[in-house]
Length: 255
Image (cartoon, rainbow, N blue to C red):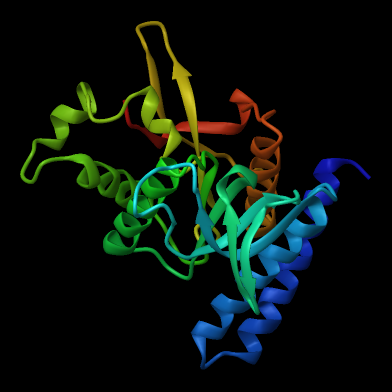
């Protein structure tokens, strides 16, 4: 079985089990979010090499000489199973040493302006703790227009002219890719936004490209399959975007 087939298989299982949960917990939406988180952890654990593991909890970096050297609670932490990877553990609570952490995924039932800006704050803190690979997984709808507006609101002074920033934005630069999420998935909207370096004849840019989901009959599965591939490839630092498979029109530029 190829890697892409494995991603597809996990995506099919995920959607099948999620739909079961939606029927079972039709009147209890928080339980669906919990099931979704657990399904994503199971998928990642199955796809990852044996030397990696997945948990929820906190990231700690004792090498940083400051009082606040621990993250907020993280939905999904992917880490290398090393001698001192777990700093503290009791029941479902895990504190993982930052040197072992390879990725963090925030899982949201839905996303609005406030919850997105809070997520960006958490990601900036993770970057301070030297966690580079960060992702956002959203079950609900998410539009390019909203995402782009929220990004600029996070870094812009109040009442700043956003149209100017589109033309010449100094608020995002190469160093910012260490805290900005590497990809953002909206399962319901069938959208996967992937951070990338874009070039044309005049200049180069940092921005998000929107992946084109070619499988018209199973967009939800295809979108999730591509997200899993993105996470796995970035953990292995091998991810490359096929220019025939994304849309700049439906993405947006940061810098």
